[in-house]
Image 1: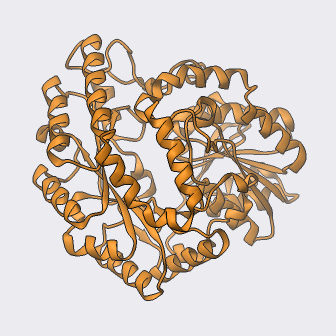
Image 2: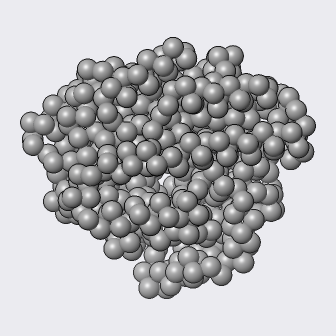
Image 3: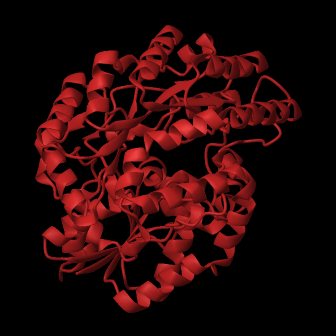
Length: 499
C-alpha cells in the first residue's frame, strides 16, 4: 500500500523559520516500510529561508496565516496537490496540533477532494485531546488516531489494503475514532508502547523534499517518551506519566547512522526532560566518549535535575546547549502551575549552568489565570537575576488537555468547544479564549496588553546584547568548523531575528 504522511503548513505560510524533519511522521514511515508498505513524508511546513525569526511577535502574523489557509492557494498547498498527483497514495495520514488545526483541516479537504476513495487518517496531540469535536466538524477525515500511532497505522494500512469489511475491521482496532452508520465510534484505548528499542529508527530517507534539510536538521532525536510531572499548563500527560526509555546502545546506533548518512555533528534531543534520570544521562555521556563520537548536542532539562558534576560530564560528551523551564518569578504562581520546583532550585541551577560554560536558555511565561501585574514584573526581575544566555518569553495560551484549561473554564476565561468556522476565523493564539477583551482575570485587557508589550520589549533588549549573541555563536564553533555552511545559515537567521 502507498501511504502519504503530511505535516501541514503553518510557519511556511507566514515566512517564519521552521527547522527539523517531522520526527513523528518519519517514525510512522519507518514502521510502514518495515512491513512492506511504500511510505513517503511530505513536510509542507519546511521553511529554511525565513523572513522572520522573532517568535515573540508570531501572533501578529496569524491573520495572514488564516487568510492563506482559507484561500488554499499558497505554494505549500499547491505542492501538496502536485505530490498527490505524482505519488497517488492509497491512504493519507495528516498530523494535527492545536495551533495549526485549521491547516490540518484544509489539508484533509484538499486530499479528500483529490480522491474521495482514499482514506484520510489524522493523528497528533490535538486529535488525542479533542477527537470528538474534530470528527464532528471535519467530514474530510475518515479515521482519527488517539495516542501513539505506530501499531495503529500498521493495522489501518492492513485493513484498508485488504478486502474485508472496513467498518467491522475498524471496530477491532484500538485507539481510533471513526464514523459508522450508528454515529461516531470510539474504540478502546490503546496501551502505550513499552519496548521502544523494538521499533525502527525514524526514516529520514522517506522525506519527499529531503534536500530541504541540512545536516543539523537531520539530528532531531528522542530517547524517551512520557513525563512523570503534572505541570498544569502542559498537555504531555496524554503520552503517559511513566517515562519509557530507549536503551543507550539503541540511541548510539541511531546517532552513528545519522552521522554516516548525513554528516550530522549537531544533534537535538527533544525529550521533555533529558536529564530526569541522571544515571541514564551519565551512561549516555560515557557511551559518546567511549565511542569517540565527535558530536555536539542540545537538550531540555529541569532545574532540579542538574548539578555541576553531571553538567561537566555532559559538556565533555559534547553538550553545548541546555533549555530549562523557569516559567515565573512569582513563588505563588510557581506553586499554582504545579511546576514542582522552587526559586532557590532555579538559582542553584543557574549557578552551575554558568560554571559549566554550557549555553543555556530559560523559558518564562506571563498571563496565567490569576496572575497580577506585579507578579508579571516579578518574572522580568527574576529573569534578570538568573541571567540566562537567552531568555524566551511566551504569553499563556489555554490548551485543551491541561489543568489550567479546566481552571479557565471554571473562571469563565476559556471556551469549551469550537466550530470549524472558529478555527478558520479566530487567531490560533486565542482559539480557546472565551472573550478577547478578557484574556486575564486580574486587569483590563488594555492594561494587560501594555504590560505584555513592555515585558516583551525588555526580554528582546536583553537577548540582543552583543555579549549574549557572541556566546551563542561561540557555543556552536565546533559545528561551524565541521560544517561552514551552517554558519551562513545562522547569520541569516540572526538577521531575520534582528529585523
